[in-house]
Length: 374
Image (tube, rainbow, N blue to C red):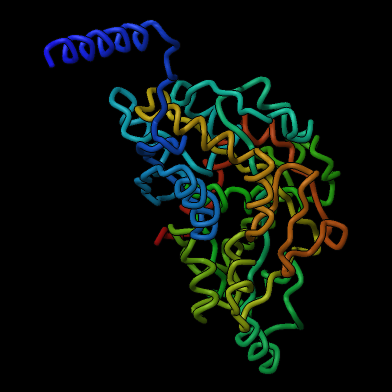
C-alpha cells in the first residue's frame, strides 16, 4: 500500500512538472471568447441606433453597457470637464470633423479594422484626423404632420403641401414650426448649414462652396433670419422634442433628421410624412470616437471595429439609417433612394473650421429676435 502511494505521488509530480513546462493557454475574457466587462457610453443617438447597434453588439459580446443619453454639446462639454478623470469610454454618434477640431485632445487615436472599406470621400478626414470613425450617413429633412397640414390647406393658411424650405416662410406656419438649437445640437447645426447652402442662389452645392455659402455675408443668412422669425420666439433644446412633438400634433412641421423620422414611419405612424427639401438635402457622415484615457479601451475599440464591419454595416442597413459604406444598401422601405432626392453636398472642411463662427452668427439672430431656447 505504501509502495502504491509512493508511485502515485511520483506520477502526480511528473504530471505537474510537464504541465508547467508545456505550452501556455492564452488568456481569455470568458470560456466562450466573448469580451465581457463594461462600456460607458455618452450618446445623442436615437433609440433605434442604440438598440440596433450598441445593445446588439453588447449582447453578442456579453458586455454591460452604461449608457447616458444626452445632446452632442452636453456630451462634449461633459467629456471635456472629465478629461483628468475620464468617466466615459466612448462617444457614440454626434462626432464629426467640426466637433473634433473644437475638442482636440479629448479622444484616442484609433484606426478601425476595415476602415479601408469606407468610401474615399469619407476617409479623407479620417486619415488626417484618426480620432473618430465614420459609420453612417445622417440626412436633414422636414417632418410634416399631415393632419395639421391638411387643416391649414383647407383653411387657406397654407398654399399646398410643404415641399421645401421656401414653404416654411408662409405666415400660416408662424409658431407652428419646430427647430433645434444649432448652438448645441449637431442635427440642428446640420439643418442650419443645409439651409445656408441650398437657399443661396449663388452656391454650386458641390462640396466646395466655402465662404460663398457659409461665410458671414452669405446670401443664405437672409433666408435663415426670415425662417427664424417665423418660429415666433422659440427653439427647442432637445432634438427628440422636434419629431416627437410633430408626431403628437404640437407642431405642423419640424426641421429634423432622417433616422428618427423614418423610425416613426417604420413603427406605424400614419399622421406624419418625410419631406426632403426640394431645394436640396445634405447627408453628412456621422462618427463615433473613443474617449482619451478610456478605462474600457479594448471594448471601445471592439465596438468601433463592429460599426464599420460587414456585420455592423448590414445591421445599420436594417435600421432607419444609411450605412457609410457604399457596398451595403439600406433595406428600409420608407427610405427614398438618393436617385429620387435632390442631394446637395456640404463643404465639410470649411464648415468644420468655421463651426464656432457659424454658431455665433446663429446665436446673434436668436438674440436679435428675442428667441428663447426651451
